[in-house]
Length: 115
Image 1 (cartoon, rainbow, N blue to C red):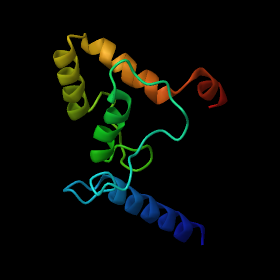
Image 2 (image 1 turned 180 degrees about the horizontal axis):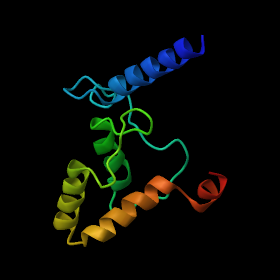
Image 3 (image 1 turned 120 degrees about the horizontal axis):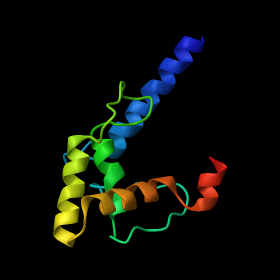
């Protein structure tokens, strides 16, 4: 029974990810049904949309904890390319862009303390 429950939970997660991030103009955002963001309130990054855009790149690659293993130790090429372009367009250092995105992911201090 436990194995079947885990299998069902994994199938549900895969279906939810597909509905939210399927691409080809048939996902949640493309259909105008809403957008995906952090569940708790976040302090926005200095660059509007960077905090939401970075996890979207990872989602399109299906890079979720426990969903796609094994994870590589480094930053996925596609995410790094996104950050490089953001840095280039905005005249910033790549490291600064990375710090802003990762700070957004961690959430406000109160949320970090709870985790």
